[in-house]
Length: 310
Image (cartoon, rainbow, N blue to C red; front, side, top):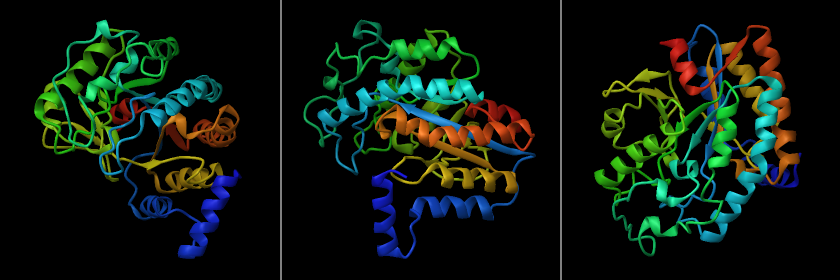
């Protein structure tokens, strides 16, 4: 167990009488208490791939430039190790990509609308340095396209928080449509949208742009909304500082017992390096792979799972 996780567990134990994080306990309870929803257990792993486009956090304060760049560097560093693990265990994953990450220069995207929330200095799109590979990741997307099985989803164009009161329909429409245009230009089929910060808004515009699936802000059975889009349950954010691989496997075991969908999502920058990423994910992916061979669970992408259950 890493020192940071141990320290967090000790702190939680002292404060609440339990070493488990609140979100973990709530999700474990949800999986255990919900009635069987599917003919077999389902597993999805989603990577929110935004590199340095990570400052859309009004409630927590805008992420600093230095922190955004640190996250971009870590994501690049950990990307090959994750792909290797997924390939080794035959687990397809969903990669929710910020559209700007699928570029290698700014001349390849359309002019965005002016957008100036009062909690940042200057225009939203001014942060783009037009040269830093922490903001451009076409090479990473091409690696994903080489291997079969993984799904590429949109995570907006530049990680704007759609639920922020300053986000208007013009900004939302650009973020949705431009991410589709940029990603589809690479030959990737696009059905799924992951809202930054899991705050759905402007879903009518999403539907008009032919997105059919999005990650919701709540947990529940996959179902259509008023616009005909499939709402995919939010699942649980995973991080080596939140809980360990043994606890993650316990959630998968509960999903198997209850014929539920277990949905993990995370960012690559949450792992300090390849060693930590492998130590966390290898036991989890091994268990999912072995359970899949026994017919106990189906690992698939968001799009694959929706197709399987509808």
